[in-house]
Image (cartoon, rainbow, N blue to C red):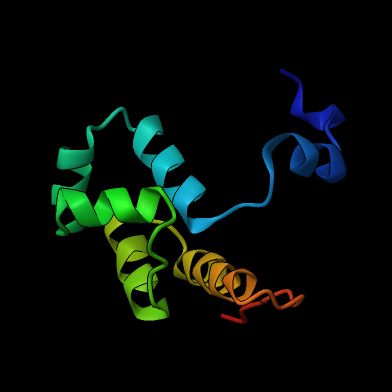
Amino acid sequence: MNTKNISSKKFFEDYGELTFAKLLSSWRLSLEMSQKDFADKLEITPSSLCDLEKGRKIPSPKRASQIAKKLGLPQPLLVQVALQDQVNQSKLNFKVSVAA
């Protein structure tokens, strides 16, 4: 697939907005890890990981930052996505941006 020809509008139409749940489950799958092994890596229970991956729970900014650190991902990105999930859950029409 040639990503140079995909517009952001098309991307969001096809895949929807990035959520913490999608980001976390996609990252785990890209590492080809089981939920149990990934939960161990994050030092959380498999049921907590399942709740995060299914979007039943949204992490606090602090927890999102800790998860990012353990995965070697940019902390501002995961915090921003978690905050945006909270805003969306509240049915507010705001976009969150994080200055690092």
